Length: 91
Image (cartoon, rainbow, N blue to C red; front, side, top):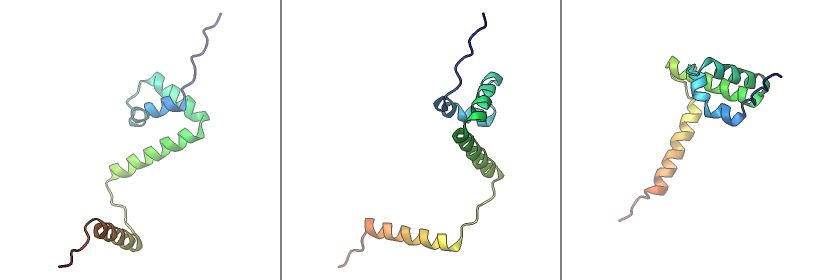
């Protein structure tokens, strides 16, 4: 009689151990389970890829240029919020 295969990791289990997996801090058996799950689960592949890319960009330490239009929109939004929160007092 052969031993039954343990149940595959669920997406929830993947998300719980994702940081360790992406950082390479998990045991090889767990990495194998992650790899098996990722091979058949596109949503989890997308999450892992996004996290890896975010970490790579962060570690590179290069600033991301913000387009001038976005800077203007952000500045205007912050000014509006400031004015709503701290209205000018008229004497």
